[in-house]
Image (cartoon, rainbow, N blue to C red):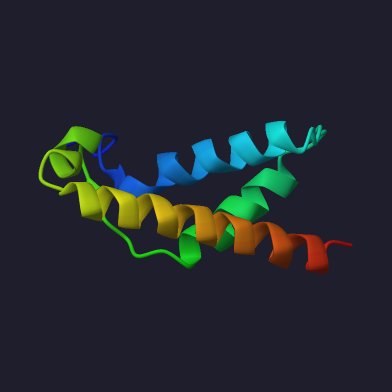
Length: 89
């Protein structure tokens, strides 16, 4: 029995948003700790929605629900950057 296809719907959305912000800010990350810390903080601020395939959930969402999810991801990631930046050693 394999469970590799089961994942949190928000994970990939958060990873994409983090990469977008790092590129926009021209932040070169030499180690994975910084973006991974941001991902953990952001994901802990979002609800969990486990799916096997993104299309499983995306197909059933309304346009408004897609927008709400995207907005919540952007907010969670932005807040996570602030939190991690304030608590870095």
